[in-house]
Image 1 (cartoon, rainbow over the protein chains, first blue to last red):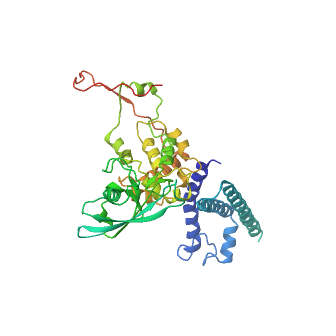
Image 2: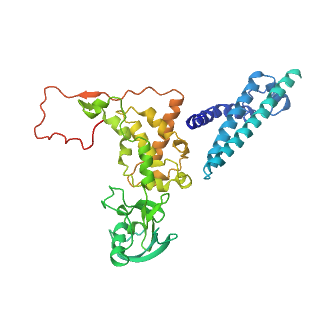
Image 3: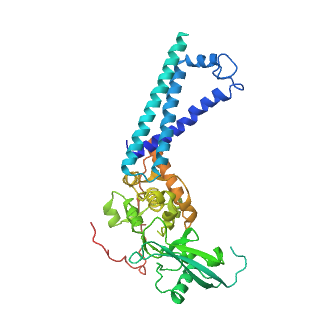
Length: 124
Length: 279
């Protein structure tokens, strides 16, 4: 990927995070005020509310998108900070490879958890 | 900072280095009798006359125009000719060559990497109508508002102070740096220019535009009031909008024909012949 494309995607991910993080914050931290997306009422982290949201395909896709975008934005930012440390060309490649591997692994774990939870919640 | 302007003795702590004889830089002290109105450049001249004729630094215009006498004065990159001694100290003054550059000798930094990077970002008008540029039939139209878009960036005198203050330059020699990047933006937003795509390729290299993390030191130290950090941020924004296909295609300024029915003033001389061979 070209350097400029990666950076532009980093910016775009930041913009998306404003929206996705906004939805997440409204759902989980303004729960007692707004009570959105909490079918059982009360606190958002109440198990029945979590299951209620988890049953919806749209929420599963939301969390997978949120996870992927946050990982890309965060790990690209971390890579930029590490590159400030006067790394050699070889070290830069190693850092990139480690972060990409780490990001993909976390994404697979997180996405799998969302998919499994959604299928189990549907069966519950 | 002194409130009262009186003559006093100021100790100049000067960082010396001669690569032919010294293994590493060292500090040397000179006591200089300072009168109100004396600049750091005047103080250096006094040292050369009265203490050590071997002290080396670079200067030319003595009025903040040529950009030759950039150096690190009391920890801040600035012009020696533009800095009154009593404005910053009445006791001690530390003077060193600009950081982030190799030292040629004493206070003389090697600015050639900056000039090479400056050339790399194509800091000149790029257009397809080569014939018109070489043998103009008129002038390219530019409104006062168009001029104001880039005017402040034309005040750059290439003194290297911004490059010396840049924290990214301190860790990354290959980073293009604030001076070249600001000049790339200056030409990109000039309404007469049509080289945005070519210049974009020049600045989005591995150690280019995106390595800037907006420390803002370049703008803080610029002795001419140019704001390179702003130019870099605006260029990032422009490239991001390009990426999202949200920018309109820019049509470069058209040629404004010569006015009809007007005779050329005979007192205005013809332009001199070209000094370089035309393509």
